[in-house]
Length: 127
Length: 418
Image (cartoon, rainbow over all chains, first blue to last red; front, side, top):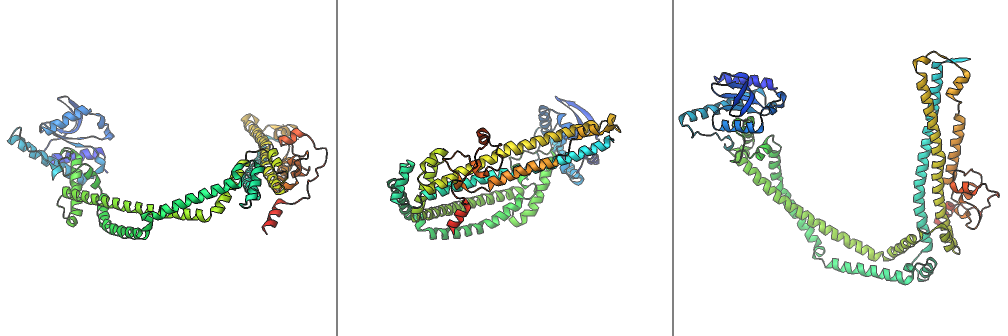
């Protein structure tokens, strides 16, 4: 079982291995969304955030802010890997999942670059 | 002579232990009396049953009519009883005809065979479905993925959520585990297969429940037929019992004097009434003994114990440490050894209880004489001041003389039985 601190360290490692420059505990404040993000590459606009009660993060964002963040991710304006419950995964799984997330981000960013406004959307749920 | 505080405390402890032991023994006596009172209730029911047997030994026209007159209870007159017997018989016979005409009872054997065969078929069909669906249901994440409608357009988890990937991985594991056997290539088809199997299983289960309900209905009809047959065959004993019950229901609310007057010229009935009244008195006396003596004794012992405890608390204060206590003061604090007195008191209560419980000479009570049941039970040898009616009456001035020669009730009954 992983703690949030362990989870953050693992994710920072995976993101950096993919070429991202991750800063930890960054104050994020954009378009009505204001929170302290656990890991963030401001240039690539890619990061990760734990929503666990361990660090009181569940209260960091309001419901409206979460909705705004989710919409921004869906529009491809930024990409944040959200971990609701780190206790259900082990290190190997977390590395695998983060890697899959970043692969998906790469696909979406490439699509956005190629054809603005008509990007492909991953639909893992319909595999 | 003086005594140190520690020695006084030791004596107080000893007294407290003695008091505690006495309290325990009084509690035991209290529980025994409680059980005696409960036993009297059973004896009372038995006594009422005996009176009914005495009054209605058989269903005989003359006896029933005489009883109806004596009790002023027309419901037990011969004509009424015969009419009720006939109505019962007629009702049962009608119901029997209806039951025998019911096709379910007529074809009972065929129905049971059919139910058995179809249940076996259903169980055979349900077995593999149950195995398959249970295996999937008990697989981690299967039900969660199903609830999230994983693999369909209705799946709502998104690529930026951790759950999306845990579902992905576990869906892959589940398909790998079940796919080869089921021919499913992805979770969607596996889930569809599960839903189909579950639907089929539920349908078969409904069919099975319907068969079991059919069998239960048949069993109920068969049981009712057996009961109807029994009520026809036993109509006389059922009617006799009904008359006896009616008689007891009529007599129970009557007071002692009315009962005695009613059976003044019916020796056996009067004796049975005396037993009923006597058992009621035994119950009342036992309750008085518990309330007036045992409970009072317990309260006294608890007060003694509490007083000793307070003294002990006081003497354990540091200012009393090593203080010399004169003998007279020790006596005042500790009090005398009262075990012998307590023991005698408890022994008296026990003797009284035994005397009441073991009394069975109900025939010795003479309703016409100016004696209380307590006089009959105690032969005037026991103090009955714990009983309100004895206290109210005051001391007896003449020795109690039994109404008839002493005969133990139980001996009578065992003699009759033999």
